[in-house]
Amino acid sequence: MEKVVFFAFKGELLCFAHVLINALDMADQNMEAKIVMEGEAVKLLKELEESGNELYKQAKDRGLFDSICKACSAKMGVLEYNETTGIPISGEIKGHPSMSRYIKEGYRVITM
Image (tube, rainbow, N blue to C red; front, side, top):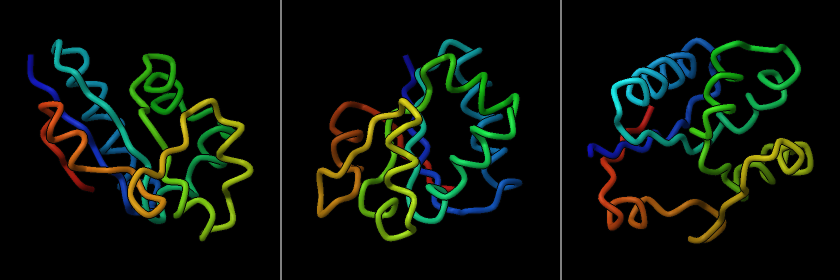
């Protein structure tokens, strides 16, 4: 089975919508897809949670979100809020999620 993890860095909703669309499509095609929120993208969670964004809701309901960066959430002032989303907070390497962990687990890493 093909395994892909999207590391979303950009804080632009239009750009992040492409992460959601592609992760959902891959899941529909029986691929294992995960999403990791990094960089400025960690600021999007409040907007996505509160707006009722349908793509976000579908991806979250299907368990596609693997983690949110602890260091970036703290730096962007959204750590407390992000901890309430039900998505795990991760910070294995200096407060950030580890790409090498996913690679070792057989995931292809895509950054957007």
